[in-house]
Image 1 (cartoon, helix red, strand yellow):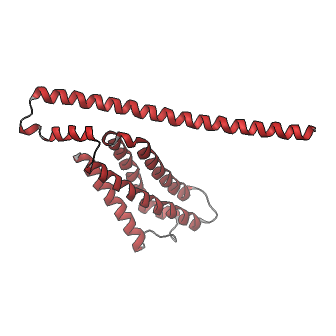
Image 2: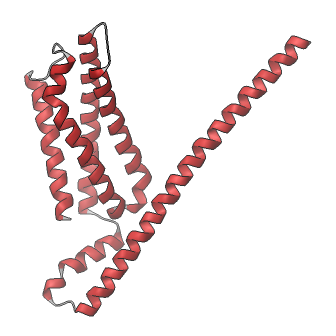
Image 3: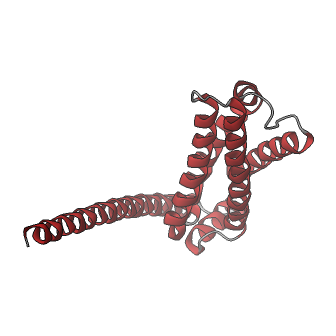
Length: 202
């Protein structure tokens, strides 16, 4: 959990620095896109890496919230990618691109702040089984036998394997839902075309 806490603190520091730069005028809409990227680009890349790592920790600490965590991180990454796209795409109005990019960045900061709150909540209240394992791990130095500890390590590995399998199932379910939705839309479009052809013939 120590590394998890460190990553939370790192991400919190980065978004605080960016928010300060926006508030104090170091990063403003009147700057050209290139200048905004020079000031914020490296930190945005760090945010992407940190949210990805925190997501993996959350998959272990809060396995029952995997779908929510995945959606949240995907939403953050999409906003950061739009921020980058607005800054790098050719435009007849560079300052308009800067404005749109900063709008995405501001919203991303709000989403990241909510994500950090969830991370802190997960750290304080991990899933019951994980909490028990972490508690036992913390007491190892005060008298847990090597045999018992080895059994707990095997149990933890089993839990991680089951969580990984669960994530795979969630991913497959999500893809199937997307495919079913696409098939439904195709069916509705074909049905609409059929009705139009029928009306024309009549």
